[in-house]
Length: 351
Image 1: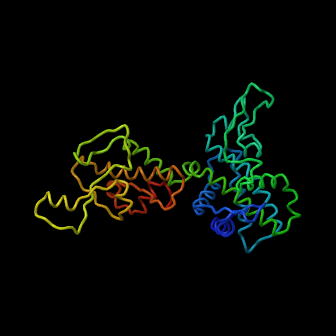
Image 2: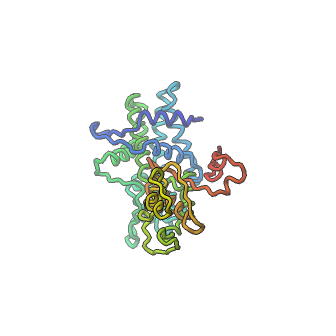
Image 3: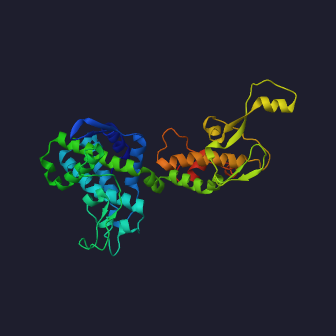
């Protein structure tokens, strides 16, 4: 089956922005930054650089989602199969997250002589983060706990209830043909919200691995990380080094227009120049001219501001209302490239 990613996106946006506790309809959860969660979910399903035994999971889940989103061709028999695919696919989906979270060759994912690794664990143990032992009765081996998601069997928190619903549905999926269309649609919403909960808990880790923009931001962080220890003192104009550098408190001089003119240079400076935090320079101004003598800290100031914004985004995995920093040196404009050409090149995506 071929799928239409835009139709899938539209259907999920329509049905799953708010999760409803199947045990209590009054208990609801609004996904923050829903569009980013959904984009990451679909991008992760299309991501193909995974362990061979998990390679078909993404396509399997996408085809199941498309069965529900093709409004012109909905057939109950197809929905029965789709629900089975969504519920059984959740185990492999969590294993794909584990592969990124703990690395492909880690004990947690791949296992060793003492542990099976999540790749060979059952859904119940994966949910509670329990890496099964090769020999369960061997008390000389400590139990390895490595959470992928937050889950407790006894919890009535809406996220835990969704995870447990999928686990039970996976075990009882053979009775799906006996369910009504309405019941199947409820299961669809709960399953999709369960997937979104898992994405929400791991979005920073996942995006750093699969999202071209996040890979670019990581590269910027590595390039500018030295700015954390090195900056230019704006009062003396001399370079300085600090082991306790506090980026949000680094200041630059801002030249403001419209103030009283004076023929005396020192009066002009006192009237027109103020100190502002470097992190506010670009966030609070649409266009900025950064002017100074060679070595006065122009590039360092720009890099410091970029680094601060990069760290905010990477720490949460969410862009939200933050501006996305794109740092371009003059070399990019020497070959008559358009902005679109440049962004396509640095983000390594097709135009």
